[in-house]
Image 1: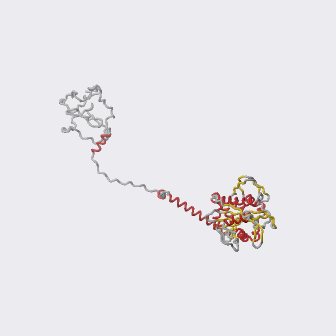
Image 2: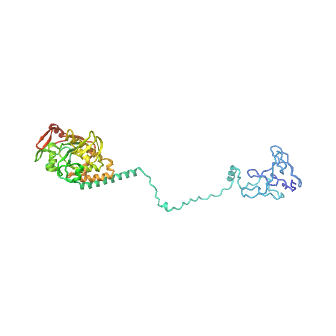
Image 3: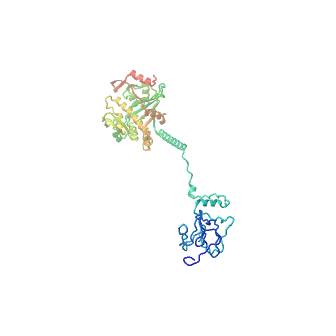
Amino acid sequence: MNSQGTSRPQPPAGDEYHRDRYGRILRDRYGRPVRRRHSNVPPPPPGKPATTPPVSGNQHPARPQSPDQPSADGYRRGTPRSPGNERRYPQTGAAHAPQAGFGTPAPVDNATRALPLPTTPPTTNQGSAQRWRQAQPVAPSRPATPPVPPAPTGRAEKRRPRRRRTGRGCITKLLTLIVVTVLALGAAMLAVDSSINRVAASPAPHIGQTRGTNWLLVGSDSRTGLTEQQVQTLGTGGDLGSTRTDTIMVLHLERGTPATLLSIPRDSYVEIPGYGFDKINAAFTFGGPQLLATTVENSTGLRIDHYMEIGFGGFAAIVDAVGGVTMCLEEPIDDPLANINLPAGCQSLAGPAALGYVRSRNFARGDLDRVEHQRAFIAALVDTIASPAVWLNPFRLIPLMKAGAASVTLGTGDHVWQLLPAAKALLQQPATETVPIGSFLDTEVGSVVTWEDPAAYELFNSLGANW
């Protein structure tokens, strides 16, 4: 009888497992039943309570059968569980109900005195669970089924694989760009060449062949084609039908040697075929480019191979097309005849101011200082034309081509692409020379300059003159 007056279930005779106060088999933390220590104490007779065997050796004392009864070690165990707080099996979660009576003892294998292994792995220790899994029979493995790829969407089907950019692709694009640029420039050059003005300028007859190639560069002071407004803007004045030259230069190109830009003063006193001695620029008035080229050949001994001429209006238009040319003046220039008043220092000259700068002779040496200014300005103009700010800017390049085609005149048989070596030579700052002057004279044709024959002939011979 317990404290409530109810009978307590008794364990069956010969039971080797520890049980709680309700007769349930106690289990360790791994879920295994706890056996009693082997003892020679005979089981109690029926109807008598079991006595606790004496503790000997390393045997644990028997647990008390009631909460109020202390165990041999002084601790109280076996506190009854409240309803609903019964032990549950890990594999099913079902409540472990107390056994109804102990009339039938639990099956025990007397030979091994061990129960069968539990059918579920212990849940309180990872190592024991792993050993339990290894002891279980292994089911035959099924062949792995390859995963089914997801169905492609419409957007993924349209997407193309990205190509890796390689150095070869960049080089190909660069070469393509260069070829397209060259073809575009070639087409533009052909268009300009077909629309450019041409004039007969080949001397008749020619002198013998000389070394290298010689271009005759002429700056005409012709006012033909200029309106009254343009005449006032440019400050040209004078006879609108005059056809003299303000600039006469010979550009000598020879392979293996630096180019030379030779200036011939326009008042040089020379013999003009069929007209006697006169200023050299008068030959342009008497017979045009052809007679001028013949006079230059006979006076210098240099064969003229190509001819290029530009007038007042065309010069100013080209300067405006490139956005002006920067010049650095050592001293101010005030010349009412050239219609300019320029301060000293570096400044950008527009078309009218640039034209007045190359025409002005209001200097101590007159025409000699002017030819030096002309050479310096031509070099600056060519450098500006060749700059990326002009070539890569269609708003500069297209007006330049139009102005050049309208204002530049070439000799018959000359072409625009033949100007490329001349432009390259001017960009490389060629050597500049002026025909040596011997004296200034007043003649029937006005004030003239004569050449210093020994020095002049020596200069012409250095350029390959043929006398």
